[in-house]
Each structure stands twice: as C-alpha cells, then as structure tokens.
Length: 178
Image (tube, rainbow, N blue to C red):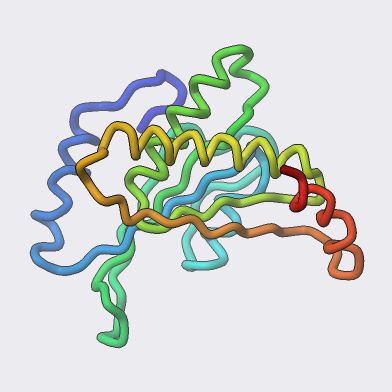
C-alpha cells in the first residue's frame, strides 16, 4: 500500500483478497504492528521473524508492507504467518492530517490482524496514552461497523527500551490513571 500517494492500488487489493488462492485451505495467522513513528516497529518484526524490512531513523516505512511466511512444523494451529509492517503514527510531516490518518491506519491494521502488536518505546507515558487511545478508537469502529460479526482480534503490548530498575515506578502513575 503506497503511503506516499495515499493510494491503495487495485493490484494490491486483488492480491490480498486472493491470498486464499495462494495458500488454499491452510490456516493463516496475521500479525500486524502499530506504534508511533520511529518506535522500532520494523526492527522488532525483523528480530522476531528474521525478516529484512527497511529500518532507519525518521519516517522509513510508508504505507503497509506484508510478508507471508510458511510455518515449518505441524506443532502449531496455523500453516502460514502473514506479517504486516506499517508506517508510524503521529508523523509530524502529515500536519493536521495525522489524526484522521492515524485513526484510519489503526482501524485497517487492527482489522486485518488476528494479533496486533502495539509497540511502545521508552518511558513517556503520554505516548502510551496516544497509542492506546488510537487503538481503542479503532476497536470501537470495528465493533460498530461489524456488530453482527464476532471479532477475534487481540492486542499485545510490547514496551521496549525501559530500564528494568525503575520501569514500574515511572509507569505506575500512568497505569492507575482513570
């Protein structure tokens, strides 16, 4: 998906919707990632799955990148993993458009993912609030649009680059805030 032109090419939609033709009746697990710009989303996916999504400081990933990985063993309940890497939220270069953009991106990413990794970097509690608010808004939109469908999406929070000794003390205030 082209993040520069804010365009979703028809060939991309066709390929994604025809993914079932590629894998047949095999089971697919979709793992997507969501987080602020430069929070290490691509780096985390690269480390977790041995991928080579491009990484650098600033806005590197534009749009959505996907990678289909076969699962080499029968010990799991699925045969393939679809890894979905996304551009970051709260990109300053988007200006005032970032709020609508972030909500649309989060709704898309959480909607297609069986599991969405919410990636949070550092100890800034305002960033935790921003990402959590965007994710909750996306879940609410998915529920409102699909009230007849039981959603099975789930989120896993990854909080990285926090020093172990004082992490609990610095974040306890934010977690107890109503």
